[in-house]
Image (cartoon, rainbow, N blue to C red; front, side, top):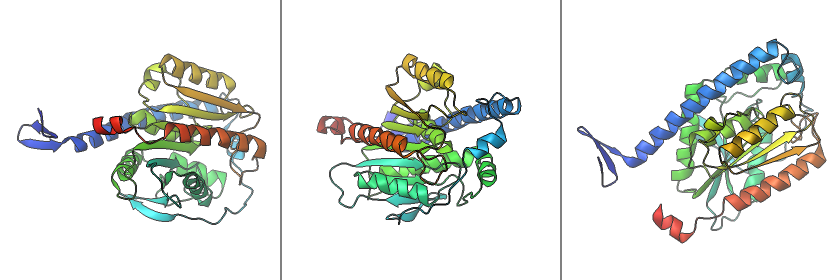
Length: 304
């Protein structure tokens, strides 16, 4: 029985806030299991030559780096539960209390991802880049692939739950609106977080692995903006169309933007960086996040 903000369970009194946290972890675990199943199927397809028409070696080559250095960083490293993260605050915080969880590519939480957090902070959002690799960073495609495959789903679920709790409770943040954003591996996790927590308001994913089952996509409470490259062999247009159809059937509000570019086209350190497409995509992402992460109306605050 629910009484005075607590759930009476036998002799235990469980705070409703803790119940919500447990629910987030439970939902995340389900989302992660889904991701693992999809990854397993993708690996099987790759071995059979059906993973978007490319094999594992070809997929690694899509992620070759140029070695450019990221711009100087403006945020700082923080502890988020059992993991590290990177916090970037707006220079002049206003009334908007929006926070965005930033999910790294398969390379790990490197300076380029931290720079993305700084870019979001420059737009007035509080950005928290989440480290799913336990402090490790890949420098070659083979290393990155190994790190990606070594992610422990239970630990990742806890890290994301801790990050959500952090942006909701930390006195510097206390987010009213929450968004997620990620690229490639991180794009998948950005969507997984939205699948797990219906309290997330906006989800942005760049060329991540995408489910297409409308029954699973119906768990999303956020509005979704997805960015893809038309020339990305790892995510065929047919799969993008199925994803879009699944979102529509699940009644999830969404935007899908496809650009004349390949995989990793938005990463300035990638050999496949396409400035024109990256700039156009970033313009849409900025517009979307600004619109979806507006402060809650007073009536909504009083009812929350």
